[in-house]
Length: 113
Length: 113
View 1 (spheres, rainbow over the protein chains, first blue to last red):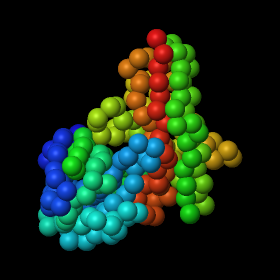
View 2 (tube, chains in turn purple, green):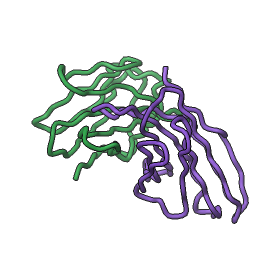
View 3 (cartoon, rainbow over the protein chains, first blue to last red):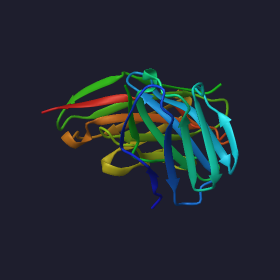
């Protein structure tokens, strides 16, 4: 079975802190994604990566950056956390196949105070 | 551009009743279609998918969905709702040419005892 793990289930940070969210997948998938999920807004794509060191902006990249130094690991960075970044963050991975089915981690609920 | 519409942000059914969650998509090419389920405070789990072949697709937990090209629909059904089905359900589409999935806004399924 595909396993996608995220470093924390719950995280509380202060405004202005630098925040790292880590995601690891064990199925050698080429593609990895970071989403945020807010009530009534569904899933919104922040960034995705289709290869090591490659990244592309999604729909809402402002205030975020990402790093993919190894194929299995994709990190989301909040350079200076703000209260409007309080959200559920979901990581996903997918293989390079025609269907692009995505596999999700359990999510990190981040609260910025 | 592709889009996915889920009719109803909340759907309420009685335990034992039929579950019907609606999903319509727009795509200029034959799509790949997915339903995901999200239980509270968890990540998304693939429920079922349509790629090619049989248009009636069976998934986990007794759910099924039918791809109707003429109606551009992929509605999710279950003959008899169970309390454990209470969750949020997301429909998604890929045309196979991009890395991303296009997501519906989600439908929260509420089961009344």
